[in-house]
Image 1 (cartoon, helix red, strand yellow):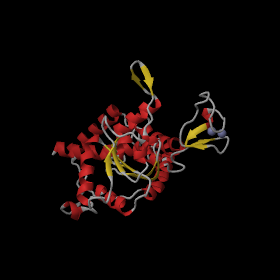
Image 2 (spheres, rainbow, N blue to C red):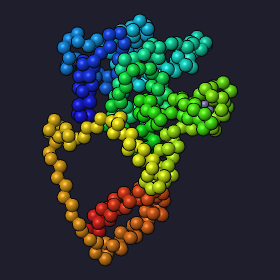
Image 3 (cartoon, rainbow, N blue to C red):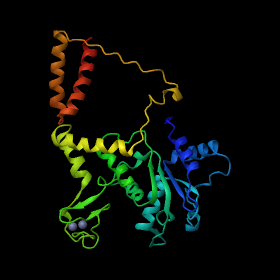
Image 4 (cartoon, helix red, strand yellow):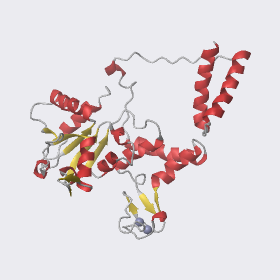
Length: 303
Ligand SMILES: [Zn+2]
Ligand SMILES: [Zn+2]
């Protein structure tokens, strides 16, 4: 928050709109009012046509979406609409399916605010968001990766970055965004080859090598692929760059080299063995980070 993502996006909406295609801004429920207020505050009245697509009485008419309106909606609304359309819901004992305008139009632009909300690629919300169609896509997030490198996949998949988001076939040039084995659950709907002849590029080239080897060997190659991709798809703003706007004091880094005495060294070694045994740390890279934390803690403890 406070990094200017919203204001920058409002400027983009003002500078470039479609005459006949809508825009969709997706955010957590808590941010809905904030988006509405920010747009009202920073734009001339009438310059943007903004509507909420939210709540039990939301206007589901398709004609409403065939305009240049900017719709503000939530992740949970998209998930609900997708579920009701694909799987239906019970009404007077019968299963009813209800088409949602969200999945029938091609939006001009979709903006995912707090995009890490879809970090679990297998969640219903992420699956629903992947079904939205549009020409331009933006993911806004202060934390594109919270715990695991795998969480980046959802954002990359939403942006449909090739080859990172795709499934490929080892036997032919079949390439697909979605795992499609609906006909008999064994053979690809596209090429007819069996499922185990297909692979997810992200899992094979990035995720699995990093999970299995950490920052060494094949894992390092996985990281290299990621680091080639990220600068090409990411506009990064750091707190340091925004320090003047945020009123932060300048950051001063002082490096001081200290050495353990015999007692501290002894305590450190004992603590290290304890950490290795109890936590069973698998990756060398992770271990090094932990090592430094222990060192700081141990030094503080003994002193
Ligand atoms: Zn094939
Ligand atoms: Zn195939």
